[in-house]
Length: 65
Image (cartoon, rainbow, N blue to C red; front, side, top):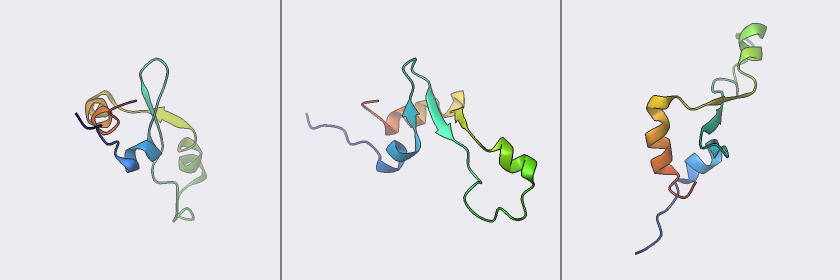
C-alpha cells in the first residue's frame, strides 16, 4: 500500500497535542487591524482547540498525527 499524503495546508495550521486534542491559532488577525478594537485583537491572541464537530475532518487531513 502506498503511504497516505498529509494535506500540506493542514500541517501548517494544526498541531496534535500529546493527549490527542488538536490545537489551532485564531483567525482574523493578519490584516485590516486598524478597524478592529483593541479588545477583539487581544482576545484573538493565543491558541485554542479545534471544535469537536471539526475534529474528524482535521484528523482525516493529518493521517499520521
